[in-house]
Length: 424
Image 1 (cartoon, rainbow, N blue to C red):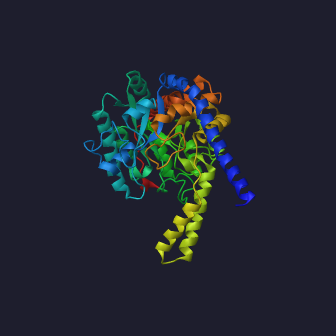
Image 2 (image 1 turned 135 degrees about the vertical axis):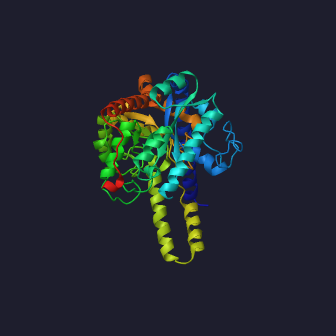
Image 3 (image 1 turned 60 degrees about the vertical axis):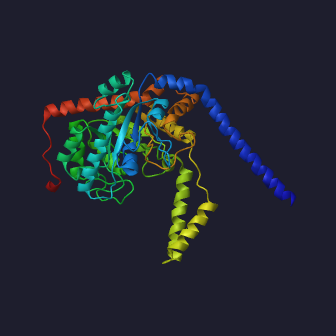
């Protein structure tokens, strides 16, 4: 073999060793701060904005606790990201359980399936009363945390679940839902989604009425999944703080699910919160670009091999073997927190992992036990304990309290909206 071959080989080996040493060094540095992070998370409730355990139970065992004990989900294939011991190890103090249903089913079916998801959360807290308790208010969260349990809140993921009806919205509030993501992946009759073609240039008139009625109820407006213009319209209309339950900074990763800088500024003025997520393509621009290239290559193969899907599959398998997807990292998630802090300050940041709603996770954030590692990284970067108390939970509690105060004022001013979508 040539000298050039050995030269390339040893340079490649040295590069791998340096990357490995760098990663190990970063972990070692974080370990120095991990106990301090744990002590912070034992003082204030770590409030996670989005976890899809209800969806996992639906798909794996049809919601049957008799077939899957939430004390251990590690034996499953594939394992879940969450269970009771790991939530405890990760110091989770308050969890928004997502009651997600597909946006591609009929909206009337979505109403039924969302009720089934909400029923699961109620049964979860009844099944494991030593660990969970349903929370409906900020005071509930603080009381439950002080009692040593995980405050469990219900967040609806997608306005398709109200089937264009404010009456249905009100009934979901009565069942315990305390936020609603305005859209999921599909543009609705009243709001544009981030990953679908726009129809309304944001919110329609009925969409604006949905926001107003959510304010009156005290249901938080969640702007993850909506188009940038829907974000801006909702922030213009709302009288209460909004939330992004699981979104990152678009300046660092250009995915349309992320929050543009101008919307970050509006969120600060609104006194809202952006809960930084661990979704890999929302975290790493390199990974997002990789999958864009993969999608383009697949379209090319489908065009070149029309009528031969097995050939397309063969070519895509070969492409995947030759083009490994770059991984995102815990450090990149921290970079998004840095960016939002630099834009608008720490008072408007939270955490929304999206555990059990995604197939892969950043290196260092593989399951719910790893929250202290993220907070250790932030300590290493110079965040104060007061900063981290806010990011962990105090910011979310403030948003809830402000929304509750707005709801009380609006309920004293007028009754439920009588508006129907047909009025427009």
